[in-house]
Each structure stands twice: as C-alpha cells, then as structure tokens.
Image (cartoon, rainbow, N blue to C red):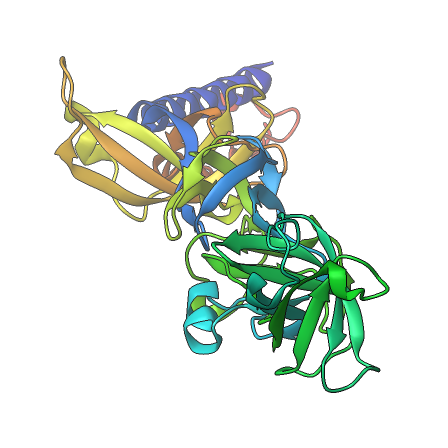
Length: 392
C-alpha cells in the first residue's frame, strides 16, 4: 500500500514538473498574427504599343508563362484598287516607316490598267461635239505607227483641252502615239484627239508602326478592299515580331492588371503584375515590447486560421527596425520564409508561433526524467522501517 502511494506521489511530482516547465516554455513563446503575401513580384511590360482588343485574364487567376493576358488590336491596310502585288519589301517585325524610307513603300500594287494616255482635243475632228469630251466617257485607241496595237479606255480627268485616259484594254508600248475615237470603228468624224501612251506607276502601299502580318504574296491579284497588311504602334524589340498577344511571361497568380478593353497602351509600359507562387512568404507584425523576442533565423510554426490542421515550418528572414506607420502602439514588420503547398493562397490569415523555447523545454524535461533516481522495491514481507534488517 505504502509502495503504491509513494509511486503515485513520484508520478504526480514528475507531471507537475513537466507541466511547470511546459507552461514556462509556452509563456516564453511568442504568437503573432499575419498573412500570406507576395515576397516577389514580376512586372509584365507591353512589348509594343497599340489598343487593347480583349482582356483575356483575370486578377487572381493562376497563369503559366505562355498564358495570354491581353490581345492587341492591329491597324489594317486594305487595297484601294484592283491590281497585282508587284513587290513586297516589308516583313513581320519591320518598322513600316523604315521600309518606306528605304524602298518607297512596304509593297507596291500594280493597277489593272498599266497604261495611260495624255491626250488633247487639238487634233480632234473639227466639230463642236468632237472638241468637247467628258469625264467617264469610254473611248477607243489606235496606235498611229502600228495598227495591231489598239485598245479601249476611260477618260478620268480633264483640264482645258487636255485630258487623261486610263487604258482598260489593249497592249501598247510606252511612247506610242495614238488617236482617240468615240467609236470602235475609229471613224474620222468621231476622232476626239491625239495622245501619248505612258506606263502607269505602281501604287505605293505605306503604313505606320511595325508590321505584324503580311496578308498577300508577291504576284497575288487583289480586289479593292482586300487586306494587304497589319501593323501595331511603335517598334518591336530587336525588330522581332512577338505577335499581337501580351503573355504573362512568368508562372504565378495575376496580382493586378492595369489596362482595359479599348484603352491605348505604349510599348514598355507595365500592364500587369504577377505573383510567383515560389515567392510566397508570411508577413506579420510584432509589438514594440515583444520585438526583442524574435530575430532573424528563428524557427517558427505557421498555422492557417482557416484550417488549424495545416501547419508549416518557417524561418524568420527579417525583423524590421522601422516601426509601421499608424496610430497607437508601435509595431514592426516580420518577414518569414516557408514552403507552401496547394492549400496556401495569397492573402490567407495565419498564426505564427516561435518554437525554439518549446523545443528547449522539451529537452530539459527529458533530461530531468533521465537523471531522476529510481525508487527501490521493498522485498515482500519486510517492514519499511527495517529495510535490509535480518529476519527475527
């Protein structure tokens, strides 16, 4: 009975000692409130200027390096007449202005009518009617030196007795002298003048900005209104055409987006900020009277407020020496590095507890238990007061 009582008292004393030590350790530990923040941010720059055609991503969305954040609206250049593409000097990535300065145009468009006639009514049949021509009038042409070269055209402009004919049919040699008639039979009474054939210069197609796309190939026949090329404002970096999409460039969470649909942006401007998941950290504050209780390199336990079963180990990266601005008691920012998992998101509330004091207390208790003397058992039948005495 006495043996049992002594054993119970010893166990109780050990429990009390452990409780006191643990209580002291917990009293020495520090608990802070904090949140998961972005330890690193990556700015996304517009590679070139333009107008935002569509906002593809959302703030808070997880993205990869190749995900599209915005698409840009291009400036489109269309053919203003029917014709044939006779030369392309610009390519995607090129500055349209630079190409135009060097070659006169990004490309050239040869009209369906490659000849024109500069004529006058000086040699027309001498009547009032043949001396008076009209814009839009269809006329017939006959080479004066070679009857096999003849054709058809339309009067496009008039200035005094002079007028211009665009040749729509027939083959001539630049410099040919031709008579102009109102009838296909080339009747002398219908002769309305004489002129000289010249080669129509191809139409220079120009543009501003940088070329994104060439929609035609050399030799293509196009109609008025067909797309020829597309451009964006500004100049591509290194003249390398990076496309009409603005990509995230880094994996992480979209922290902010500064452009909206229809807005104009300039090349090199910041249009979004990405928070890399690998840069997650905890930011907490410590009051002035507890600042000395935590320092760089301390190990801490991080517990999610939303799920207390989620606990992570962290290391204090920095304890600020500059008090946070604001009224009331001075507080100091504490930055903590840790390794997150899929359950951790930016902005989550956490509880941070220092763990060094607890570990030291646990080690002390274990040492105490190891050095405590063992209680000797009293042989059965011997009185407590005569331990070791011989039997009577």
